[in-house]
Image 1 (cartoon, rainbow, N blue to C red):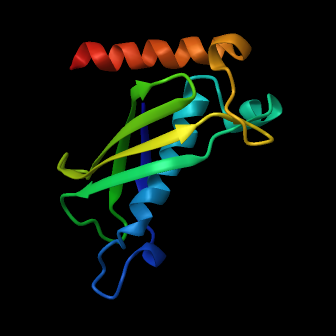
Image 2 (cartoon, rainbow, N blue to C red; image 1 turned 120 degrees about the horizontal axis):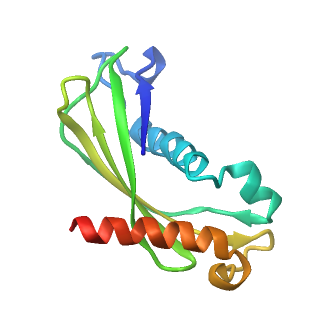
Image 3 (cartoon, one colour; image 1 turned 180 degrees about the vertical axis):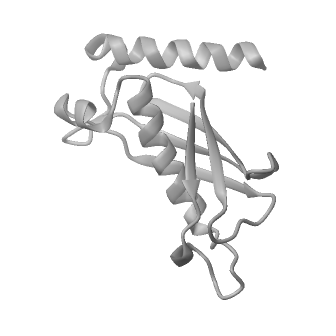
Length: 140
């Protein structure tokens, strides 16, 4: 799954280089798009009583981006551990150069903050994420 982000002027510094913190925001944009594309958008998850906070983020910056650059963010399920989901992101500029590789780990909790039993209570979502994690494992 992919998401395209155009670097905005306010995301850059005095040197016209994108501030590093914005890449994490783009990861969130891409995650929202990813969940929507697999049929589990945030309104649906929230209606089911599921919240998905961030537990961990890593970013390995490889090349700078600047104002008006288009960055394609490829998202894949790296691991799914029932209550935790690890996503991988590869961000590329228009020339196809990798500008950042990143991961994020998210939990699936109920509204009171307790982990949900994905397999038992949300088998459709569990199946979708398990299948995507299996495809990622096959590629390795």
